[in-house]
Length: 234
Figure 1 (tube, rainbow, N blue to C red):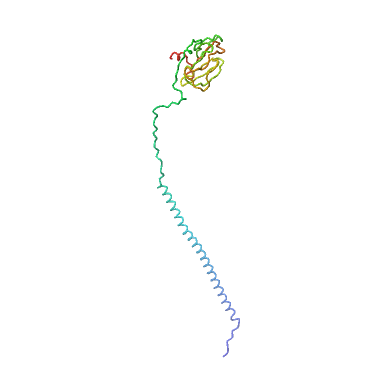
Figure 2 (cartoon, one colour; figure 1 turned 135 degrees about the vertical axis):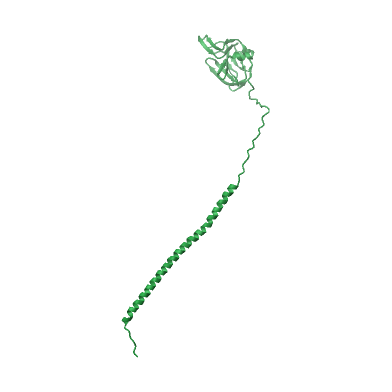
């Protein structure tokens, strides 16, 4: 029996066909693998995102719960407030008067201050100036060196020298301001307290009124009043 011999050219097309099928199958398998890998990667990413969101939600819930609890505690907690109790201040039964506080106004006219009136209060004709002038007080004449005594209590608020009334001491209390002018010297100092009858200074004279006297003027507020009205009441 003879062996059948096939030529090589017979197997070549067959081999090429088989090779093509193998390559196609491999290509299709590679594509499927790539697709599977891509799907796997996408699934992994989605799973990671999902897990991350799941882990965050409880934390947010815990924070939210704590915030709600804190707000509830603030609402429930009541701050104690101090209740103001009015204090009852007892009224003093008697007014305490310090030694330096002056008593009520006291007026006392000594005999020395009741001397003859040389020039009266109001509009007067002035011999030196030969004209009519408003005299704010009265000029009480006296002997040389005669003392001028206070007619009321009060405080010495000013001592000045004026061209019309000469050296002047002003004593003020709650009601009146008394001006003792035309003094040759003052026996008190500014700021000191005086009492009725206390020596204020010594009678003298001034440029417009050369006779020995004291110019006594009394003002209530800004208005001068006739000193005789006060002196006649005492």
